[in-house]
Image (tube, rainbow, N blue to C red; front, top):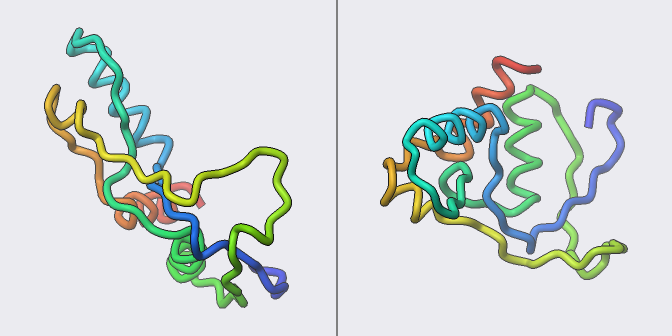
Length: 114
């Protein structure tokens, strides 16, 4: 993005971006609860990869040329689902979902880690 080159990003693939540091914090909490089980643990909310790329550049102060494309135009060895957003249901029920929304987590990452 900083180079000024056009970036193409799918606008039809939706997921739950997750800040790895916040994920690690939740895993630590789960370990100390002693509550076994399968937990989806992602930042709350969802967005398209296109929305995510735009938010990253906006928060980082980068004026980027980001063009939306359809995922069908990508050449990938592994098929990717169009919708892969997660809900932290077991986390909510087990210890309470304290995960931030993806936009707040992204802001924290950009402020602290870039």
